[in-house]
Amino acid sequence: MDLLKKKILEEGSVEEGDILKVDSFLNHQLDIAFLNEIGKEFKRLFSDKKITKILTLETSGIAIASITAQYFNVPVVFAKKIATKNLDKETYESDVYSYTKRRTYKIKVSKKYIKPDDHILIIDDFLANAQAALGLIDIINQGSATLEGIGIVIEKGFQDGGKLLRERGINLKSLVIIDSLEDGKITFR
Ligand code: 5GP
Image (cartoon, rainbow, N blue to C red):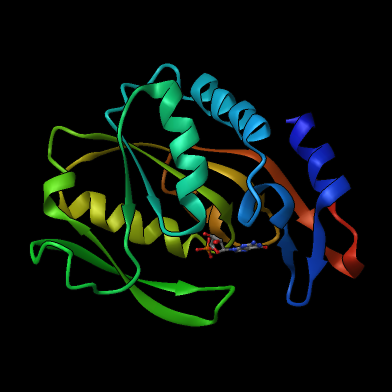
């Protein structure tokens, strides 16, 4: 997606530890007109799939999942990262190791929102080692729902997540794949 590549080159910055910062449009300030274009692109890429629900992870996935859901006319469910008193006790849970925070945390989704007749599209901002994606897939499996695909805004192709998911036969579509962030230079595949 050329528009996204241009935006990353113009506004993105490379931080220590191979972290790409895109706070001006995706992870802090949200450029809604631009995110709408991303939502339309996900709709185009998964238009042949019967999607009943979009699943993401709080916090950074919520904005892009919500924008995308408008084009599918389906609800968004976001996995919660910590135990809160408000959450239904009847939850599906999984463990996720965070690459950016370097710690493992629990994610939870109420059993009310994942049902066996659901056809689910996972949407997230970044794919690195696929820890977040694997946690969400685990929850979908616990709910006996069907995973229809995974849509990622920015895949870091130099980390193993994409390979791992594609080898499992998962319908993974990334809008851009970054091959390297070496020396602060962003190289696309
Ligand atoms: P994974 O679970 O695939 O290892 O990592 C994906 C998650 O880590 C994403 O949900 C995202 O929040 C975060 N992440 C991984 N790499 C980056 C990065 O380079 N930049 C930002 N902003 N987040 C990242």
